[in-house]
Amino acid sequence: MSIDDKKIWGIHTKNDSLFINENLIGIGWDDYGNASTIQPSREAFKERYSQVYKDAKPMSIANSAGMIYRFVHEIEIGDYVIFPAKIDRQIYIGEIVSDYNYEADAPIYRNRRKVKWLKVVPRTSFSQAALYEIGSFLTLFTVKNNADEFMAVLQGKTYNAYEEDDTIGVTAEDIIENTKDFILKELSRQLKGYDLEDFVANLLQAMGYRTKVSANGGDSGIDIIAYKDELPPRILVQVKSVDGDIKESVLQSLKGAMREGDYGLFVTLSNYTKNALNYLDNTPIIRGINGTELVELVLKYYDQLDDRYQDMIPLKKVYIPVLKTEE
Image (cartoon, rainbow, N blue to C red; front, side):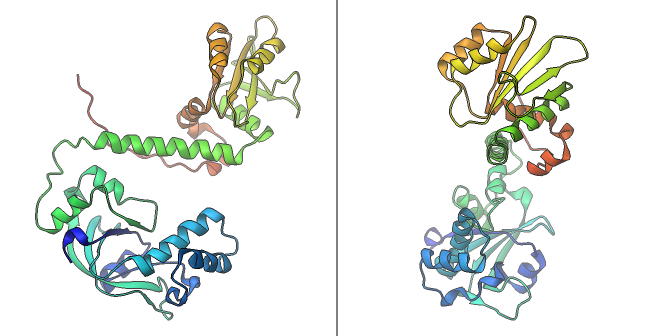
């Protein structure tokens, strides 16, 4: 079997020493049992998973059962595996040398395959894009986009990872966009109706505003009243968690509830129709915030949000490499 015919797998673990010292790779889900006794179909694997892990959600069942199936039936002897170890910050490149084996007496990672580690390479030997690909959130995954780079290193060829890497900008942008998608999905999933109103009020407080949330049902559709300080103007805030785009008529209703000297703020997790955007352009005393802009504000003021919202949207501040801007 030539290199071109072999699949390249990536894998993560919580026990680096086990993989390195015992020359194996493994996946969890120990309660799943011996997967070789299950009919070799994805549907059978999903059915078994739902029986063992009764509280699992449909997406979790599909993803997890799919990884178990791939570990048992799609990985082949002779395939390569990429293992990014955290314990020593090295990339281990190995070859699969055994079929699937379930070791019932093993304390952890009972679903196993033996591996021969062929090369141990510093992370600095690879491009940022390659490192990003093997940093997948999945336990088991295929390496495709940067497979040639890993294979070149395995064959003793060198990749000049110290040259300016034009993949850095793309990688950084992917991380940022994935984070924004995560925030918006969590807001949409966990905050509906009055819960979203409370969140927006807390976000405004983080931005330095004093807020008062209206009683459920609101007064004339106004959900929050905000002030920058003790003095006017007041800001009337309307919040909508509906999936569809906001129409011009909804903004006109907000305008109708405003008194002279008031300002309006409309917040939605979705967006605005073309006519609604035109209305906002022609009505400068009303500001519209869509889902994308709301996420930007969450990122900017995240540290000032209440703990309950930080727990709801768990984020960790990290530094990521970006391309140097040209003068």
